[in-house]
Image 1 (cartoon, rainbow, N blue to C red):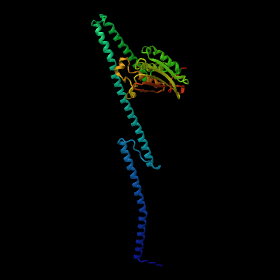
Image 2: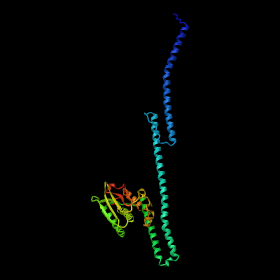
Image 3: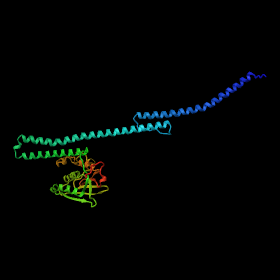
Image 4: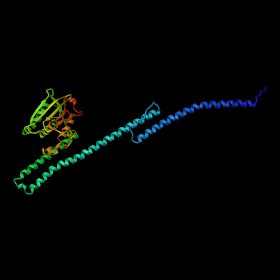
Length: 344
C-alpha cells in the first residue's frame, strides 16, 4: 500500500508547528523575563540602599539605620549593619565623653596649679620679706621685731592650713580616705561641733542654738568625717556672721536620710555665686576670705565628704538675710553607699 502526501502540505504543517512552538516559547519566557526584571530591580534597590548606608557609616553618621523588612538575607544583613552602627555609635559617644572628661580634668588641673601657686605665693613672699627685714637688723628693734615675727607666724599657720586642706581634699577625691560607718547620735555630733566653736563665737557675741527634730536620733556615718563637715560649716558661719548675730545648727528627717543644716544671720551670698560655691578655691569675697584666713577649700571638702556618705549638699542664701547650708546623712545602714566598710 502506498500513501502519498504532497510535500507542500508537509512544509505547511511544519511551519505551523514551528510557529506554535515559537509563540508558546515566547509566551512562556515573557513572564520569566518580567519576573527576572522585577527581581533584578528589587535586588538592585536593596544593594543601593545598603551601599548608601555604608557611605553614611564611612562618613561618620553612626546614627543612620536601615529599615529591616522580613527574614530574608537582605533583612539579616540590614539587622547586622544596624547592630554594627549601634556599636560604633556607642564607642564614639564613649570616646567623646572620655575626651570631654579629660579636657575638663585638664582644665581643673591647670586651674588647681594656678590657684595653689597663687595661694602659696602670698604667704611665702610675706615670710621671706619679713625674715629678710629681721635679718637686716630689725630683729634687734623691739618696736618691730615682735610684730614682724607675729606676721611670719600668721602666714606659716596659713600655709599649714592650706597644706592640710590640700592633703585632705586629695585623699577624699581619690577615695584614699578610709571611712568607717557606724550609728551615731546626730544630737551628739552637732553638740560636740558646737562646743568646739563656742569660744570663738563668744568672742564676737554670736549666739549658738540647736533645732533638732525629736524623731531624728541616729545617723550612719564616719564620726570624724561628719565632725569635719560641721566644723567647716560652723567656722564659715562664724567668719561671715557679724557681732551679735546668731547661728543655728539642727537636723530633721528626710526619708531614708537625715538632713542636717547650719543657718547663720550673716551677710548672705549673691545668687550668681551660689552655683560655684563648692568649687575649690572659689571665694565670694576674695579679699575678706584671705583676711579671715580661709583657704578656699573648706566647702569643697564638705562636698566630697558628704558625697562619700551617699549624701547631697546644697545652700540657700539671700544677701543681707543670711545663709543656710544643708547636707544629708544616711539614717539607716541600707542607705549607705555600696561596698563601704561598716564598723563591727
